[in-house]
Image (cartoon, rainbow, N blue to C red):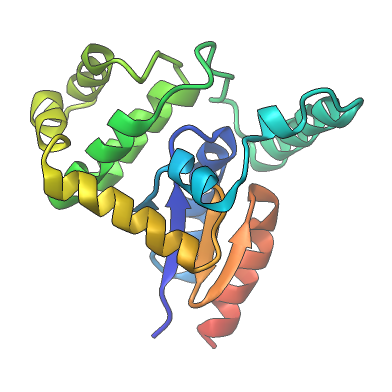
Length: 202
């Protein structure tokens, strides 16, 4: 049986927008898309990639087009709970390690919702432990426990492993999706990802 995965880092606004669309894809296809925490900085380092902010710097018209494309995506999917984080770029190491801890604790879906909301709907400076803990507690999770668990060597090692395996499968950024062995990169490939899910489930 094929597996369907979303390799994500909270630092990518496009990954957040994909997260908002994934439930509709799951409903239409009847599959569960597994969330796989990876470290975007690790992906970039391993593949010699850079963020769109860096790659578009100094290019005439491309940043403006990127903003237009985002506006079109928001409109197409009826998304109104998104705003740019004023603290961007945010170092996501703490919240990505805590995502591994949340997965081990069986609360990853709730954790993802809280952190994404705190990054891109009601933006906060999510690289400071106190702010992270407060956001998690406000979202009904045990922020202190998750942050404590995030410091365990096994948790740190698992995030590194996830990232290395993702790179080995062809990944170079986020949002990235896998339908079986087929990889799709970018929120603009969600339709192709969904079509592959349907094809594999026939």
